Image (tube, rainbow, N blue to C red; front, side, top):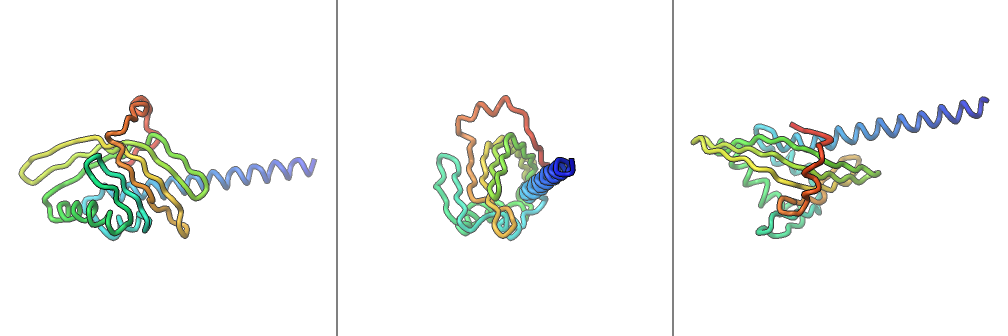
Length: 167
């Protein structure tokens, strides 16, 4: 009986440890998304979310970018300049449809509902489909693949409800 009880207790402890680790991983990954929908864009903070060898696949008319320096210079810095100078205000909400975490790798697929406003009152809204691949480096999650899937035929996702909503 003692052996059985010990096995049950150890099994439950292992399950609880895994569940706690998964909850921590979810919280850390969600924190990355919140860094993108702040009132101001802190380029250094956003850059910290990306791995040095990040691959960015943009829309059909944009080139494949490899490396954090190129990605930051062509995507994040111009956006930060507009937002931080008051020329553009961004509001967004991420809907994570699928999240898979396996050891030190994770993958999210979802939608970004984005609204922009200019000081003159012009505004726009659009939905962007995306997939991000994360790798845990030195205990910290980093985006290693940033894929803009807006034009991808992911209509199967249209009927799925978001598992996680990040505002």
